[in-house]
Length: 169
Image (cartoon, rainbow, N blue to C red; front, side):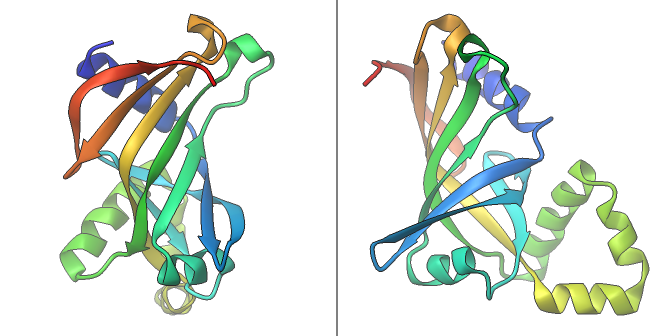
């Protein structure tokens, strides 16, 4: 699998899927939650309350993982992404504007939330934009064989090296 084929496979999964399962850990206590996400390159943007358990975990330990996968009716149809990286709140107006644009492009219904200025202020006070910056992405595709996974490292938002086929554990 070439880097270009790997990238196409990743976005073929990311683009139509609306949620990712985000896994965090604090004080040796793991936690997972589903969040709406939008891809900005390989970075994954999501809104969440800074008071939520997963965001409180990220404030202490930004290391996290995520999975993204469409619904599958049989084991042969299972395809998905397993992601390792770090997540943090997005700072700066430029970063927030770029992330918000990616989010609104994927979720046009969110425009309605911004149409009412009073509601927008209330919403913004409850939620913040976060970004998960992957350091490693694994692509799983059981149609290529049970547990068939290819892996790449992500450095500075780009694929580093060639995808490596991993052996099933």
